[in-house]
Amino acid sequence: MSKIKSISLSGFKTIKELKELEFENINIFIGANGSGKSNIVSFFEMIGFMMTDAFSSYVSRNGFASSMLYHGQKVTRDIEADIKFSSNTGESDYKFRVSHTVGDNFLFMEETISYQKKGISQPYEIPLADGGYKETKLKELYNTNQTVKYIKNFLSYIRVFHFHDTSQTAYIHQARPIESNTGLMSDGGNLAPFLYRLREEQSKYYDRILSFIQMIAPFFDNFILEPYSNSIQLKYKEVNSDLELGSFRLSDGTIRFICLATLLLQPKKSLPKIIIIDEPELGLHPVAIDLLAEMINIASRNSQIFITTQSERLINNFEPKNIIVIDREKDENSRYHSSFHKLDEETLSSWLEKYQISDMWNSNILGGRP
Image (tube, rainbow, N blue to C red):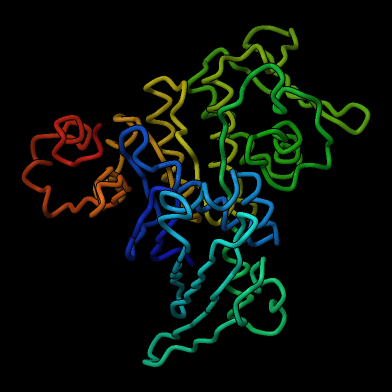
């Protein structure tokens, strides 16, 4: 399975300098409020926008360039990133540097790709263009170079999900076009048409999703997914009842769990290759958190998963190598920045004989505390 092997990143929000942070199939970021967990999510979101030639749009929508630079443009001028990928045939690399410009935006100043085939000592490496352009050259050069095509396709697989909005006005509760069913939206807004397609075309996956939902909500019988005027709205019925109920009748935690189950238990063919979920445990019962961990493990057989969390219970379901701790430290000028370190099972072996990972987190043995 192809995956992101490591990331190096500097100058981005609270991240002054991050050097070759290596990743597993499952990666869980923990840390205190304000440590920088959300900034990792923001970086992945930014990459996703870059792949659709919407980098400038992303910058303007997120407070312009100065708000994305480490302590602003007076301290930092550039964001630099180096994303390494591994596959069965070798390793690829995508590097870029963007610089702050007049008008509080960014220009690409450097952009390089490389590929090193297994068994070959010298990597193939080319710069994509001279500096001074607003959007990545990956799309422009897509049909001219196989390495460009691979990297562009791989980065386009990144999907960031936030299932936080479960209010009555959220898209998830509204009638949605039935044809909006290709992939689950980042906010779960097309949940009804997506589930309808699974029920009609991939019933065993639909049934698996339903069985996990019923484990945390025994009252839940089935979804009512009936198209009307080329749209469909999420409804359900309870056990031993024929009454049709709107999804807004479900608790926030239940509707979030339904979104998570649908995302993580869908067929391999439609499952995003890289999944980022921001604090998926919000509103979940402890039993639901254990089931969430099980679903993450199932999805990780075919996808690379990145999670930010504050849940002690969730991290206890994973190995130390899956946990990345984020702390706030001071640089040489006493400015706060995010620091990252992966847990090492060998270093923690004596502790793990007696304690769970959450116990060590609470005791500040791991860091990641206020």
